[in-house]
Image (cartoon, rainbow, N blue to C red; front, side, top):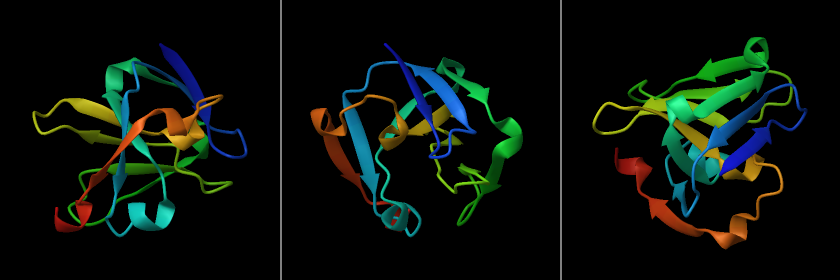
Length: 115
């Protein structure tokens, strides 16, 4: 299935292909403050439609995840990273997807505090 998403102001927009059956809620210092629900898709299935120049990147801790934020509204609709096998992934904030009911997917809690 193909999903479309954006930041709050709409300057950054994307689409991503895949099936969302589960999302993750992380308790690390950033995610616990941000409150996003994350779904991971292969980076090749993610397409930025607009807003590359409107994005800024934040990294912390081990600097392995590129948290991408709209520099206008501050919303992080996605991040870049790698899975444990080294595959490039997109971490999608499903709260930023158009017409997607976040209550229809199971949420798994991740202990990111200890990574």
